[in-house]
Picture 1: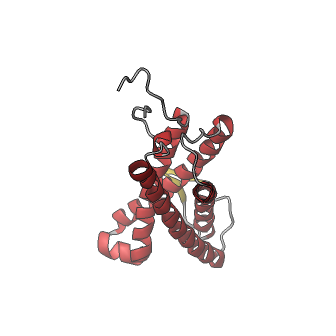
Picture 2: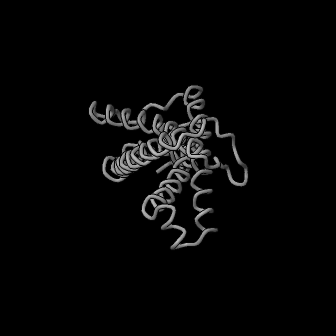
Picture 3: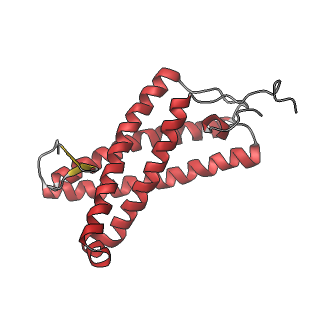
Length: 193
């Protein structure tokens, strides 16, 4: 194949691709740590791993959440500035609606989730952290509200996990079955068909 004349798949702007994959990595890390916290609970973590490791797990989970929030705000700005590339091959209407719905929900929940976590943490009287930095709580202490918010935080986390698995499955389907360039819009390799 003459690569000089090969058609090129449409792609997202470089900044959009970098932020997408950074958010994906942080979300996977936050979900894994959050699942560990949910599975063992605070006392269970301390009994199993000790106080220092428990503190580290919580610090990393909170830090990943704060970074997801910041990067999602950047991502929204990049989307407003650059838009999204056209599909190389038109999607059937049902797939297009499903894709736009999942993307919209992921954008919304990946902003709402860390805000709920921040609020729940502050309402519980715990420090909101970004690595070694202690961030302002922004919300007054309220133990009952904190418990409710942590329950919602968990529900939203499970919802994000389900949506992310659907998103990944669809990307793999477009890459391996349809071979229609949908996945290549967000990759870094050769954009040629």
